[in-house]
Picture 1 (cartoon, rainbow, N blue to C red):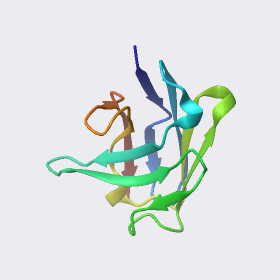
Picture 2 (cartoon, one colour; picture 1 turned 60 degrees about the vertical axis):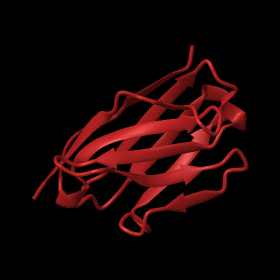
Picture 3 (tube, rainbow, N blue to C red; picture 1 turned 180 degrees about the horizontal axis):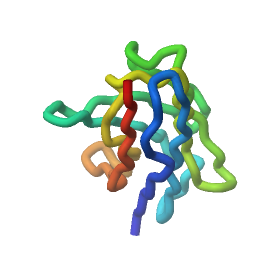
Length: 116
C-alpha cells in the first residue's frame, strides 16, 4: 500500500524558513518523480516543485530562488526547504507521486502559516 506522510509545517514569521519532509512507503522511491503541491484557503491546488529520479528539478515561478526540493533515496524522503517565506506562501503543502499515468497518490498535507 502506497503511503506518503508529510511533516514539518508550522507557524513562522515572514522571512523565516521551514523544511518540509515527505516519507514514502509502498513504492520503489528511487524510481519515482516526486512533487510538492500547495493549496491556500479558497484556492486551487498548485504545483510548487518537482524532482525526478535523476534529480532534475523544476519550480513554480513564485518560489524560484526561495524554495529547494531535494530527495534522499536511502530514507525514501523528499524535502522542501523553504526560505524567505512570505504570507502568500501560507497553504497546506502536499506531496504527490504518480504510480501510473492515471493513478496518483497524495499525502494528507502539512499546514504552513506565515505571519506578516
